[in-house]
Image (cartoon, rainbow, N blue to C red; front, side):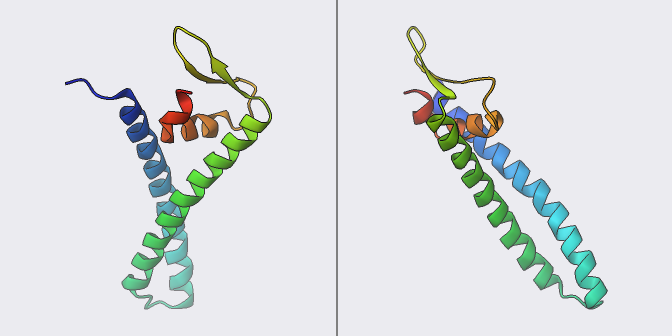
Length: 115
Protein backbone atom coordinates (compact mmCIF):
# COMPACT_ATOMS: atom_id res chain seq x y z
CA UNK A 1 0.00 0.00 0.00
CA UNK A 2 1.45 3.34 -1.10
CA UNK A 3 1.30 6.39 1.18
CA UNK A 4 -0.68 9.40 0.00
CA UNK A 5 1.82 12.21 -0.80
CA UNK A 6 -0.61 14.85 0.46
CA UNK A 7 -0.95 13.13 3.81
CA UNK A 8 2.81 12.72 4.07
CA UNK A 9 3.28 16.42 3.30
CA UNK A 10 0.72 17.41 5.94
CA UNK A 11 2.19 15.14 8.61
CA UNK A 12 5.67 16.55 7.95
CA UNK A 13 4.32 20.11 8.28
CA UNK A 14 2.45 19.34 11.51
CA UNK A 15 5.64 17.78 12.87
CA UNK A 16 7.53 21.02 12.08
CA UNK A 17 4.90 23.11 13.86
CA UNK A 18 4.99 20.83 16.89
CA UNK A 19 8.80 20.91 17.08
CA UNK A 20 8.91 24.70 16.90
CA UNK A 21 6.12 25.02 19.46
CA UNK A 22 7.89 22.61 21.81
CA UNK A 23 11.26 24.35 21.53
CA UNK A 24 9.74 27.78 22.04
CA UNK A 25 7.65 26.47 24.91
CA UNK A 26 10.72 25.09 26.67
CA UNK A 27 12.44 28.47 26.57
CA UNK A 28 9.30 30.33 27.71
CA UNK A 29 8.69 27.87 30.55
CA UNK A 30 12.26 28.16 31.81
CA UNK A 31 12.07 31.96 31.78
CA UNK A 32 8.63 31.91 33.45
CA UNK A 33 9.82 29.51 36.15
CA UNK A 34 12.97 31.49 36.93
CA UNK A 35 11.13 34.80 37.14
CA UNK A 36 8.28 33.20 39.08
CA UNK A 37 10.69 31.73 41.63
CA UNK A 38 12.29 35.15 42.12
CA UNK A 39 8.85 36.51 43.01
CA UNK A 40 7.67 33.45 44.97
CA UNK A 41 10.27 30.81 45.93
CA UNK A 42 7.42 28.35 46.59
CA UNK A 43 5.98 28.62 43.07
CA UNK A 44 3.62 25.72 42.55
CA UNK A 45 4.51 23.14 39.93
CA UNK A 46 0.84 23.16 38.89
CA UNK A 47 1.16 26.80 37.84
CA UNK A 48 4.30 26.08 35.83
CA UNK A 49 2.61 23.11 34.11
CA UNK A 50 -0.47 25.20 33.29
CA UNK A 51 1.71 27.96 31.85
CA UNK A 52 3.64 25.40 29.82
CA UNK A 53 0.50 23.83 28.38
CA UNK A 54 -1.13 27.15 27.49
CA UNK A 55 2.04 28.62 25.99
CA UNK A 56 2.60 25.51 23.83
CA UNK A 57 -0.94 25.77 22.44
CA UNK A 58 -0.66 29.51 21.83
CA UNK A 59 2.72 29.23 20.10
CA UNK A 60 1.38 26.47 17.84
CA UNK A 61 -1.69 28.50 16.88
CA UNK A 62 0.35 31.68 16.43
CA UNK A 63 2.86 29.91 14.19
CA UNK A 64 0.12 28.51 11.96
CA UNK A 65 -1.60 31.91 11.79
CA UNK A 66 1.70 33.53 10.85
CA UNK A 67 2.18 30.97 8.07
CA UNK A 68 -1.33 31.67 6.75
CA UNK A 69 -0.70 35.40 6.81
CA UNK A 70 2.57 34.95 4.92
CA UNK A 71 0.79 32.76 2.34
CA UNK A 72 -1.99 35.31 1.79
CA UNK A 73 0.53 38.14 1.35
CA UNK A 74 2.57 36.04 -1.07
CA UNK A 75 -0.52 35.11 -3.07
CA UNK A 76 -1.73 38.71 -3.23
CA UNK A 77 1.71 39.98 -4.27
CA UNK A 78 2.28 37.41 -7.02
CA UNK A 79 4.96 35.31 -5.32
CA UNK A 80 3.00 32.09 -5.87
CA UNK A 81 2.92 30.84 -9.45
CA UNK A 82 0.87 27.95 -10.85
CA UNK A 83 2.95 25.20 -12.42
CA UNK A 84 1.83 23.77 -15.75
CA UNK A 85 1.81 20.16 -16.93
CA UNK A 86 3.26 17.59 -16.62
CA UNK A 87 3.44 18.24 -12.86
CA UNK A 88 0.67 20.57 -11.75
CA UNK A 89 0.95 22.54 -8.53
CA UNK A 90 2.41 25.81 -7.34
CA UNK A 91 5.86 27.31 -7.03
CA UNK A 92 6.85 29.87 -4.41
CA UNK A 93 9.32 32.30 -5.95
CA UNK A 94 12.79 32.51 -4.42
CA UNK A 95 12.35 36.25 -3.83
CA UNK A 96 9.26 35.72 -1.66
CA UNK A 97 9.64 37.24 1.81
CA UNK A 98 9.04 34.58 4.48
CA UNK A 99 9.21 31.89 1.80
CA UNK A 100 9.64 29.09 4.32
CA UNK A 101 6.41 30.10 6.09
CA UNK A 102 4.55 30.13 2.78
CA UNK A 103 5.90 26.68 1.97
CA UNK A 104 4.93 25.48 5.44
CA UNK A 105 1.37 26.72 4.91
CA UNK A 106 1.22 24.91 1.57
CA UNK A 107 2.44 21.75 3.29
CA UNK A 108 -0.21 22.17 6.00
CA UNK A 109 -2.83 22.59 3.27
CA UNK A 110 -1.74 20.25 0.45
CA UNK A 111 -4.90 20.91 -1.55
CA UNK A 112 -3.62 24.47 -2.15
CA UNK A 113 -0.28 23.17 -3.41
CA UNK A 114 -1.88 20.96 -6.04
CA UNK A 115 -4.12 23.58 -7.63
